[in-house]
Image 1 (cartoon, one colour):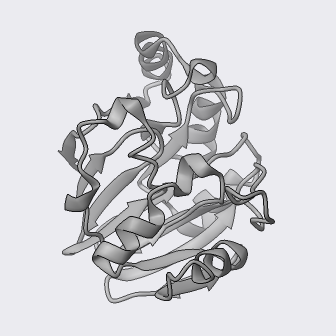
Image 2: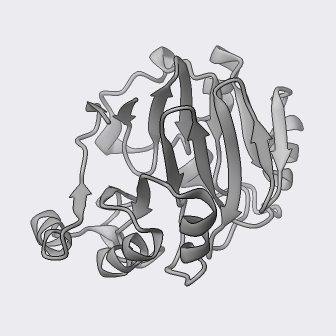
Length: 226
Protein backbone atom coordinates (compact mmCIF):
# COMPACT_ATOMS: atom_id res chain seq x y z
CA UNK A 1 0.00 0.00 0.00
CA UNK A 2 1.33 3.44 -0.99
CA UNK A 3 -0.04 6.64 0.54
CA UNK A 4 0.58 10.07 -1.01
CA UNK A 5 -0.27 13.28 0.83
CA UNK A 6 -1.62 16.24 -1.14
CA UNK A 7 -2.18 18.57 1.82
CA UNK A 8 -4.93 19.30 4.35
CA UNK A 9 -7.06 16.10 4.46
CA UNK A 10 -6.32 14.92 0.92
CA UNK A 11 -4.56 11.60 0.48
CA UNK A 12 -4.28 9.11 -2.33
CA UNK A 13 -4.07 5.49 -1.24
CA UNK A 14 -2.92 2.95 -3.80
CA UNK A 15 -3.97 -0.52 -2.75
CA UNK A 16 -4.17 -3.70 -4.82
CA UNK A 17 -3.49 -1.61 -7.92
CA UNK A 18 -6.46 0.71 -7.22
CA UNK A 19 -6.06 4.43 -6.45
CA UNK A 20 -8.44 5.94 -3.89
CA UNK A 21 -8.41 9.71 -3.42
CA UNK A 22 -9.86 11.32 -0.29
CA UNK A 23 -11.27 14.86 0.02
CA UNK A 24 -9.38 16.73 -2.72
CA UNK A 25 -8.63 20.31 -1.65
CA UNK A 26 -5.45 21.14 -3.55
CA UNK A 27 -5.58 24.09 -5.97
CA UNK A 28 -6.94 26.60 -3.37
CA UNK A 29 -4.36 25.45 -0.81
CA UNK A 30 -1.17 27.54 -1.06
CA UNK A 31 0.75 24.86 0.83
CA UNK A 32 0.01 22.45 -2.06
CA UNK A 33 0.97 24.85 -4.86
CA UNK A 34 3.52 22.40 -6.27
CA UNK A 35 0.92 19.67 -6.79
CA UNK A 36 -0.39 19.36 -10.37
CA UNK A 37 -3.90 17.96 -10.15
CA UNK A 38 -3.78 17.00 -13.83
CA UNK A 39 -1.48 14.15 -12.82
CA UNK A 40 -3.92 12.80 -10.19
CA UNK A 41 -5.98 10.05 -11.84
CA UNK A 42 -7.73 7.99 -9.16
CA UNK A 43 -10.17 5.15 -9.62
CA UNK A 44 -12.33 6.29 -6.68
CA UNK A 45 -12.86 9.66 -4.99
CA UNK A 46 -14.19 9.37 -1.44
CA UNK A 47 -15.75 12.52 0.02
CA UNK A 48 -16.36 12.76 3.77
CA UNK A 49 -18.61 15.86 3.63
CA UNK A 50 -19.48 18.88 1.52
CA UNK A 51 -17.33 21.71 2.89
CA UNK A 52 -15.23 23.50 0.28
CA UNK A 53 -11.93 22.48 1.91
CA UNK A 54 -12.82 18.88 1.08
CA UNK A 55 -14.47 19.10 -2.35
CA UNK A 56 -12.88 21.98 -4.25
CA UNK A 57 -11.08 19.81 -6.82
CA UNK A 58 -13.58 16.95 -7.02
CA UNK A 59 -15.22 17.97 -10.31
CA UNK A 60 -12.02 18.52 -12.29
CA UNK A 61 -10.30 15.37 -11.04
CA UNK A 62 -13.45 13.29 -11.57
CA UNK A 63 -13.81 14.57 -15.14
CA UNK A 64 -10.13 13.95 -15.93
CA UNK A 65 -10.06 10.46 -14.47
CA UNK A 66 -13.65 9.19 -14.71
CA UNK A 67 -13.20 8.13 -11.10
CA UNK A 68 -16.25 6.89 -9.23
CA UNK A 69 -17.36 9.43 -6.64
CA UNK A 70 -18.39 7.80 -3.35
CA UNK A 71 -20.13 9.97 -0.77
CA UNK A 72 -23.32 10.42 1.17
CA UNK A 73 -26.45 10.77 -0.98
CA UNK A 74 -26.73 14.56 -0.85
CA UNK A 75 -23.09 15.13 -1.87
CA UNK A 76 -23.33 12.76 -4.83
CA UNK A 77 -26.62 14.37 -5.90
CA UNK A 78 -25.07 17.85 -5.77
CA UNK A 79 -22.21 16.78 -8.04
CA UNK A 80 -24.59 15.00 -10.41
CA UNK A 81 -26.31 18.34 -11.00
CA UNK A 82 -22.90 19.70 -11.99
CA UNK A 83 -22.38 16.98 -14.58
CA UNK A 84 -20.48 14.36 -12.56
CA UNK A 85 -22.44 11.21 -13.42
CA UNK A 86 -20.16 8.44 -12.17
CA UNK A 87 -21.32 8.62 -8.57
CA UNK A 88 -22.25 6.04 -5.97
CA UNK A 89 -24.39 7.44 -3.13
CA UNK A 90 -24.18 5.85 0.31
CA UNK A 91 -25.34 6.52 3.82
CA UNK A 92 -23.91 5.91 7.26
CA UNK A 93 -23.73 2.24 8.17
CA UNK A 94 -23.73 1.05 4.55
CA UNK A 95 -20.98 -0.62 2.57
CA UNK A 96 -19.96 -0.73 -1.08
CA UNK A 97 -18.40 -3.94 -2.36
CA UNK A 98 -15.56 -3.36 -4.82
CA UNK A 99 -13.10 -5.43 -6.84
CA UNK A 100 -10.43 -4.78 -4.21
CA UNK A 101 -12.61 -5.27 -1.13
CA UNK A 102 -15.17 -3.06 0.56
CA UNK A 103 -15.80 0.58 1.52
CA UNK A 104 -17.89 1.17 4.65
CA UNK A 105 -19.33 4.53 5.65
CA UNK A 106 -19.13 5.50 9.31
CA UNK A 107 -20.47 8.24 11.54
CA UNK A 108 -18.60 11.53 12.05
CA UNK A 109 -19.38 14.41 14.42
CA UNK A 110 -19.23 17.48 12.21
CA UNK A 111 -21.42 19.78 10.14
CA UNK A 112 -21.82 19.54 6.37
CA UNK A 113 -23.01 21.89 3.64
CA UNK A 114 -22.04 22.31 0.02
CA UNK A 115 -19.96 25.26 -1.24
CA UNK A 116 -23.13 27.06 -2.37
CA UNK A 117 -24.71 26.65 1.07
CA UNK A 118 -27.08 23.86 0.11
CA UNK A 119 -27.69 20.88 2.36
CA UNK A 120 -24.82 18.40 2.39
CA UNK A 121 -26.30 15.55 4.41
CA UNK A 122 -24.38 14.17 7.36
CA UNK A 123 -20.62 14.24 7.67
CA UNK A 124 -19.06 10.78 7.48
CA UNK A 125 -15.90 8.73 7.68
CA UNK A 126 -14.84 5.60 5.81
CA UNK A 127 -13.32 2.22 6.56
CA UNK A 128 -11.57 0.72 3.55
CA UNK A 129 -11.12 -3.04 3.53
CA UNK A 130 -8.85 -4.84 1.09
CA UNK A 131 -7.43 -8.33 0.94
CA UNK A 132 -4.32 -7.28 2.84
CA UNK A 133 -5.02 -4.06 4.74
CA UNK A 134 -7.88 -2.27 6.53
CA UNK A 135 -7.79 1.38 7.54
CA UNK A 136 -10.08 4.09 8.86
CA UNK A 137 -10.37 7.59 7.41
CA UNK A 138 -12.22 9.70 9.98
CA UNK A 139 -12.95 12.81 7.91
CA UNK A 140 -13.61 15.93 9.96
CA UNK A 141 -14.82 14.86 13.36
CA UNK A 142 -14.79 15.36 17.08
CA UNK A 143 -13.88 12.50 19.39
CA UNK A 144 -16.81 10.14 19.95
CA UNK A 145 -17.08 7.00 22.04
CA UNK A 146 -18.48 4.84 19.25
CA UNK A 147 -15.03 4.76 17.69
CA UNK A 148 -14.67 1.68 19.90
CA UNK A 149 -17.46 0.09 17.83
CA UNK A 150 -15.55 0.90 14.64
CA UNK A 151 -12.62 -0.97 16.17
CA UNK A 152 -14.81 -3.92 17.14
CA UNK A 153 -16.63 -4.18 13.82
CA UNK A 154 -13.87 -3.29 11.34
CA UNK A 155 -10.55 -3.80 13.17
CA UNK A 156 -8.58 -1.11 11.30
CA UNK A 157 -4.81 -1.43 11.33
CA UNK A 158 -4.20 2.33 11.23
CA UNK A 159 -6.21 5.53 11.02
CA UNK A 160 -6.25 8.94 9.35
CA UNK A 161 -7.34 11.37 12.08
CA UNK A 162 -7.77 15.18 12.18
CA UNK A 163 -5.50 16.86 14.73
CA UNK A 164 -5.75 20.61 14.10
CA UNK A 165 -8.38 21.62 16.69
CA UNK A 166 -10.93 24.46 16.26
CA UNK A 167 -12.94 22.78 13.45
CA UNK A 168 -12.16 19.20 14.53
CA UNK A 169 -10.64 17.42 17.49
CA UNK A 170 -7.11 18.34 18.51
CA UNK A 171 -4.19 15.96 18.76
CA UNK A 172 -4.87 15.16 22.42
CA UNK A 173 -8.35 13.96 21.50
CA UNK A 174 -6.93 12.18 18.46
CA UNK A 175 -4.73 10.15 20.80
CA UNK A 176 -7.83 9.10 22.72
CA UNK A 177 -9.44 8.21 19.39
CA UNK A 178 -6.45 6.03 18.52
CA UNK A 179 -6.87 4.17 21.79
CA UNK A 180 -10.57 3.61 21.15
CA UNK A 181 -9.75 2.41 17.64
CA UNK A 182 -6.98 0.17 18.98
CA UNK A 183 -4.46 1.40 16.39
CA UNK A 184 -0.75 2.03 16.92
CA UNK A 185 -0.25 4.23 13.85
CA UNK A 186 -2.09 7.48 13.12
CA UNK A 187 -1.66 9.64 10.02
CA UNK A 188 -2.46 13.21 10.98
CA UNK A 189 -4.61 15.49 8.82
CA UNK A 190 -6.54 18.77 8.87
CA UNK A 191 -3.76 20.83 10.45
CA UNK A 192 -1.53 23.83 9.53
CA UNK A 193 -3.54 24.78 6.41
CA UNK A 194 -5.11 27.83 8.09
CA UNK A 195 -4.08 29.94 11.06
CA UNK A 196 -6.94 28.51 13.16
CA UNK A 197 -5.57 24.97 12.86
CA UNK A 198 -1.82 25.48 13.20
CA UNK A 199 -0.14 23.11 15.61
CA UNK A 200 3.27 22.45 17.14
CA UNK A 201 4.17 19.34 15.17
CA UNK A 202 7.00 18.17 17.43
CA UNK A 203 4.80 18.57 20.47
CA UNK A 204 2.04 16.53 18.85
CA UNK A 205 4.39 13.72 17.77
CA UNK A 206 5.97 13.54 21.22
CA UNK A 207 2.54 13.49 22.88
CA UNK A 208 1.63 10.37 20.89
CA UNK A 209 5.03 8.76 21.42
CA UNK A 210 4.60 9.01 25.19
CA UNK A 211 1.71 6.54 24.87
CA UNK A 212 3.48 4.22 22.46
CA UNK A 213 1.47 5.32 19.42
CA UNK A 214 3.11 6.77 16.31
CA UNK A 215 1.76 10.00 14.85
CA UNK A 216 2.86 10.24 11.22
CA UNK A 217 2.91 13.71 9.66
CA UNK A 218 3.63 13.40 5.96
CA UNK A 219 5.09 16.21 3.90
CA UNK A 220 2.92 17.47 1.04
CA UNK A 221 3.81 15.48 -2.06
CA UNK A 222 5.41 12.69 -0.03
CA UNK A 223 4.60 9.05 -0.78
CA UNK A 224 5.15 6.40 1.84
CA UNK A 225 4.64 2.64 1.79
CA UNK A 226 2.65 1.01 4.58
